[in-house]
Length: 299
Image (tube, rainbow, N blue to C red; front, side, top):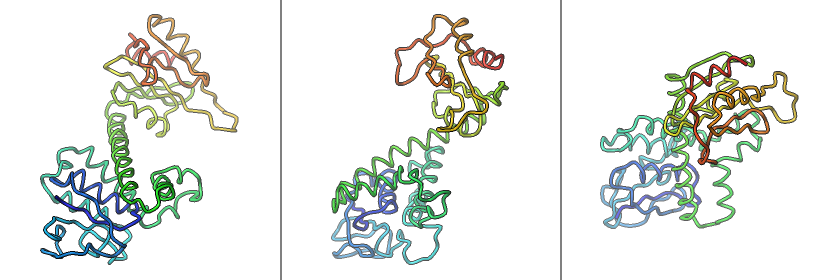
């Protein structure tokens, strides 16, 4: 048996630290998480006291974000570190950690922990429009809601946030993968609305990321099922669009050249879809990515 100890009413720093140990420190995936009052340590008979891994009543125990040990930052005023960042350093110091085998996963974890550092030092005060609802619609906001829903049930709250961190890890991995594919495989092209980009990839995250990077039209072709997804810059709510993008002409041309495939033009006229996870029964396109790009450029 192994044990991870953190403080009661755990915050993202406490749970993030436990997550790192449970997911990425070899032989700690089945450790039990226990809670003490903030600043305290687990009571019991200690061996190896002062080490990261202490023996408490014969059980291997790691304290995180409490107890003023090696994985607790409350003895320093440095706002660039927190319990989770110290825990990540400790995990990465272990050559057997799975993070050393996956560059994308390691980078994703580092980004997540950097955000936890921000959260732990109240850096949201320096965000643009810090009182915006956008920031409450986040893992921080979810945790605050769980604490209201499940008061004093630290174990349940921790379990829920651990699962949320697992989910976010996939999101960040997909984003990093998309960043690399846009840079390495993206085919830029001109349209009458501005710059477009096309990418043949399994990763659907390239669509939104490329739009956020400023491309007005993004095309993605899936090399496995041949689905093609075309997305244009969305209209801003409650504002008149100056250079309105309308994919109707693209839809008409594609239907003419590719009549046997399934194509759906969204009512916004800014999404032209040949298939998606929402409708996997659609028939993929026979058009190559280059042919789709040519049709869009010719509008």
